[in-house]
Length: 206
Ligand SMILES: [Ca+2]
Image (cartoon, rainbow, N blue to C red; front, side, top):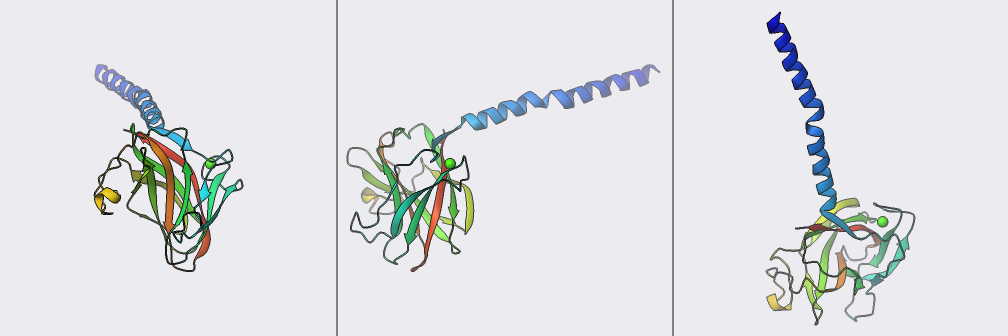
């Protein structure tokens, strides 16, 4: 009888442990995950983002940006970049002098894309930093047709290209505490006419 009581007691403790103990730890973990990401741009208010189009005389394939209020991966609105790939240069969409321009506390920029074409695209993140707006371009990521959520760009890596690295992917982003321009540059097969949605641009804390 005593033995049965002891077993029952152990079972009660085990059950109590299983139901209550992991809960606070899980909550803490989730809270930590949420706190480690800050939303940098959600496109819920009219975005000041632009297509390069003909403005830089560099054969950019972008045509225009639209504020898409019907489709979003977060909230109710997103940025839509419209392009016609000309086979000479990519399609670049950008903003300048962002309010939150110090990226030094962050290890990753995380973003959702929706590739509205039926072909793979490639995308690079561009950060122009410092007084001279030095162009740093990340390695590209492939975007399959459709939703591509949580695409990561490593802000701390040594695999960026810039003039100082002779356009080899061997540089770190200099002056990352002073980001002047943020751009996404897309490439696709010549003649492809379509658009891409950009949404929920987040920064992940170090
Ligand atoms: Ca949004």
